[in-house]
Amino acid sequence: MAVPEDTNSRSISFAAKRVKFLILMIVLVAGLSFGLWYFFLSGSHNAINNKGAVLPSNCYSVNGKQTCVTPKS
Image (cartoon, rainbow, N blue to C red; front, top):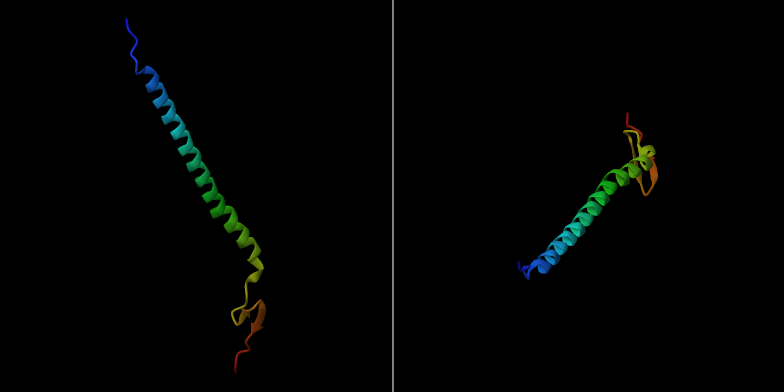
């Protein structure tokens, strides 16, 4: 029985597809990981730092200085 000549090219093609699939999966996992990190950790870090920045209703902040307006009677 003769062995077909194209079996070696099939295995190379299958190996190339596996490598492409592996690279695609690595890129997708890395992108998803970075996106989740940016959305959750970066956003929560900013929220923690801005907790003390709540101003009363009659005050505003300009260039980091708090100014409160006294209501006219």
